[in-house]
Structures are given as C-alpha cells and as structure tokens.
Image (cartoon, rainbow, N blue to C red; front, side, top):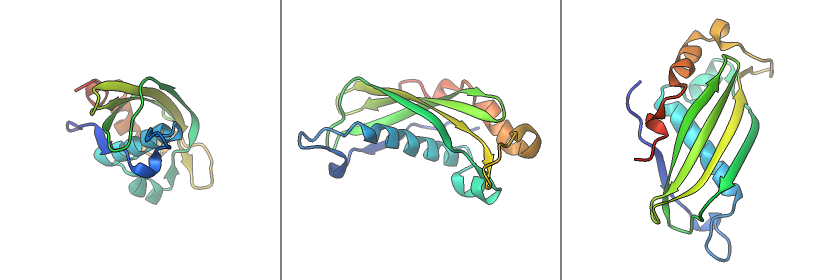
Length: 147
C-alpha cells in the first residue's frame, strides 16, 4: 500500500450551532467520511465493494470529545484498523483541529462484512482481495500518527 495522508476538510456552517461550534453528532459523520475516504485510498471503495456484493454495516460507534471544532476550522481525521478477523473489524480515530492545534475527539467503530442479503461474509474464503487489504492494514500507524 502506498503512503496515505489524513482525511482533511473544514467545518461547514450548517454543522454548527448558535455558538458556531460543531454539533457533537458531526464527529461520528466525520469519522465515517474518513473511513469512506480511506477505503478509496486503499483501492477498495464502497462502489467496488458493493459491486462485489459486499457491505460493511456499523455494529457500534463511540466518541470522546476533548476540544471543540468551530465553523471554518480545518481539521483532519487520522484512523487505524486495530482488529480484523476476516468477518469483523475495528477502526479507531483521532480528530485534530488544525486551526487550534488541539486533539478535538477520539473514537472507534466496529463493523462486519455482509452480503447484499445481510448474511455474514468470512472474507478469507469469499473475498480474498478484501481479506488481504484489511489484514495488511491492521496496526498501520502511518494513517493514525499525528503529522
């Protein structure tokens, strides 16, 4: 896999409240945006995955908030796959506010691989390319470390 930089963008006005602070629910959305971006970067985006009849629903998600992101702040999401057994995987996230230089949030999400009819998929046997990509990604800190 080639070197991947972190997912970056600005906080939009519609994502903020009357104090121009990003609503807490947006952090979960930003984690998802980073995860979708990451899948594209590793060469197995949702379009390709779904064309092969594979989906990856969320089983659980959590977030710990440290410092706010405000309207127009630039932030980046760093992520790492920490667990993978061929059926399920866990992603951990760090969201840094590049405008303030502070860690704004940390989170995690758990996913599983399922077929289009929502049956569990053991990728080691059914989708070897996906299995190899995720197996090789476990513990790669180059997407997770602070730049």
